[in-house]
Length: 272
Image: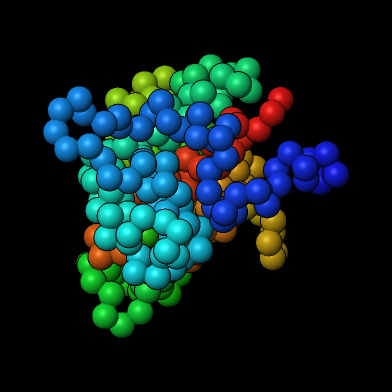
C-alpha cells in the first residue's frame, strides 16, 4: 500500500537516474557477479557502473548508442552485456535471488509447484536482425517468451523462440530444463495450449490444465494462472521488452531474465 513511509523507503531522487542501483541493492547483487581476475589488465570501468548502464537500456528502451554520457561508453556497456549474457550470469543471478526471496518469505528454497505460460513479443520493425516467426493465434510477427514461474510469480526457467513455435513445444523444453535447476517440482498449472501427452508425459511433473468455467463470457481471472500473467505485467514495465529489438534470441532472453531478477533485487533490498 502506498503510504508516505513506503514512498520514502522507495524514493530514488538521490540517484543520478532512477534505474541506478542503490547501495542496498548493489549489496544484494555484487556477490553474485564475476570479480576481477588477479592477473591481466584491470577493468577500466567499475562493474556497478556497467550494470547501471545495462539497466538503463532495459528500463527506458533506448538504443545502446544513445546511452547518456554519465555511463561508461556504450560500446563497453554493450560488450559487457554480451559477455555476461553468454556466460549465463543473468540466469544464475535470477536462480539465486529466487531461492533467497522464497526463504525470506518463509518458504522452501526449491519450489514444488509452478505455472507455465508464453508471451508473444512483436518484432522491433523493418531491418531488425534475427530469426522470427508469425503466431496466428496472437497475430504477432516476432518472438515468443516461454516462462515457468513458481506459484508466487518468481521466474524459474525461461526461453525465447520464434513466434511460430507452438506453446506446447516451448513448455516441454522448460519442464525438461527445470529438472536440473528445480528437482522438487512436482505440479504445474497451465492453460489449454499445453493439453495432451506431449507436455503431460514429457517429465514426471504433473501438468494441470486450468480452463475457463462453462458458460463464461468475457474476461475472468483464472485460478493460479493469474500469477504468471502478473509477472508478465511486471516485466512489461521495461520498455526494452515492449517489442523485440534484439538480433539474437540469447540477448532477448538475457534482457527478459534480468528484468525478472531486478524485481527480486528490489524486494530483497527493501528494509524489513
